[in-house]
Amino acid sequence: MNQNLLKSIALLLFVGGIFSCKPPQKAEAQKPNIIYIMSDDHAYQAVSAYGYGLNKTPNIDRLAKEGAIFSRACVTNSLCAPSRAAMLTGKHSFVNGKVDNAMPFNWDQDNFPKELQKAGYQTALIGKIHLNGLPQGFDYSAVLIGQGNYYNPDFVVNGEKKQIHGYVTNIIKDLALNWLKQRDTKKPFCLLFHQKAPHREWLPAPKYFKEYTKMKFKEPETLFDDYNGRGTAARTAEMNILKNMNWSGDNKIDPKIMDKFAIPENTTWGRNAYKNNLGRMDSGQRAAWDSIYVPINKAFEKAYPSMSEEDKMHWKFQRYMQDYLGCIASVDESVGKVLNYLDEAGLAENTIVVYTSDQGFYLGEHGWFDKRFMYKESFRTPLLMRYPKEIKPGTKIDNLVQNIDFAPTFLDYAGATVPSEIQGESFRKIVSGESTDFRDFAYYTYYEYPSIHMVKRHYGVATKRYKLIHFYYDVDEWELYDLEKDPNEMKNVYDDPEYADVQKMMHKKLEEVRKYYGDSDENNQKYIESYLDWQEQGRKNRLANQKKVNK
Ligand code: SGN
Ligand code: CA
Image 1: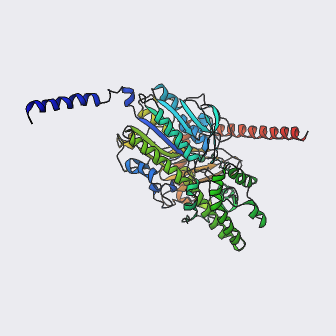
Image 2: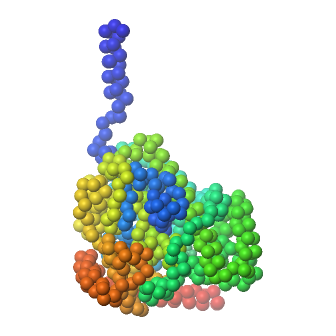
Image 3: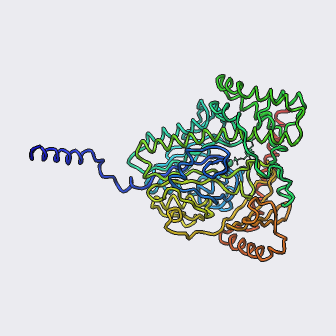
């Protein structure tokens, strides 16, 4: 090759290099993108990266492999709407005002998406939010109405109601991908990608009907718990799989078969749920359903007459797991699709991806389903996070990170100011390994009582080692657990003389923590009164409506 030819090639490469290079990006575009994935009622026991061996979630697990997994992430209030309010505002329920699923949420208050918008981000909220009113802080929102439906659900897209055909998890995934693809590439983005599944009544996508209903799952060791080691609250809660799970709505038994054997339904809603959910299906979805669930019903019809109470519990647990984990299969698939998109679009490196749930869930532990308690399975929630620029693959975090910490963490990554009223703490330095200094406790409050599942009002404080809980309103009971000696929280040691010092130490901690966050018995009283007023108003309205109907 002669010198001139070499020079020409070098020149061509140089010029080509200049022109193929993307134009220098503005500082704004260098800010990390955020995809905050939240599902509804997804127990950490049902994320395979947590090692429980129940199911496989290879896509969600990718975040642990390529980033971090948190073993003690927990919520401030184990209920849907309050958890979402805490996550948006970075404040406890008694400060942001959304203490239960019933009372209204005030969107006018500040939230982290509003702060991100000020910092130059484009923001979107897609899926379930369960907070009344038009979402604020988002350039685009497409949300389900209340709990939403699994089949052919209704959405409110930027304030306009619209039914979308298909299976909810896939629709939410498609809406998220569409939004990502049409976004303004000059701005960083924050997408809240919030799945409805695997919320009750656990209706999987037709493509998973067959696979999951053939599976058999390992029962937890406390499935037949008699609640002897704990107080009134655990004994009176209505979340037992055998006693409180609906045969029709939850376990998908045709009411005709229930009538044949005079099986009483656990709630009036059970039968309606079955009818409503099946009633939303189109003929194709319904045919797929019938091909799998009719044979299950036939087998049940044959087996039921000789089933003992214990057999019924085994049967209900399996049916529950099949549908619940079948729903998660689609959630995991949707996560995979979004991660693939980030790879294909070259966005993986500069995007923070978080996977979490609005709270944990009981998968038969203590014989339960549902959540609400400050006990382990509902207090903890799955949390996995990837950000290749700062988080090393395979990172494991055991700090008591809570849902009020998301807002300050995201604002920290975005280089935005964290408003002083935010009560959470950024965990950015913890997860990057830069520091180990973090709050050593988690504070918890729960208010929705009397209500469905009848979990009594309580509050408490947890450290890595101990948990102190106070149940109040119609009881006055304290519980103390030694989480190291009793990881399943089977024995309340509050009155055990051996724990006298621990009891004192935890009471002191609780007092300090309540003062620190500004919580008090007066707050609790205020929320009891507003809840009772709200219930009374509801009763009056129902009576008035009844009178109108009778006229
Ligand atoms: C519904 C469920 C309950 C559940 C609440 C709150 N029953 O009422 O089991 O505890 O939602 O859940 S259902 O048969 O109507 O599904 S939350 O996740 O939205 O807080
Ligand atoms: Ca929930």
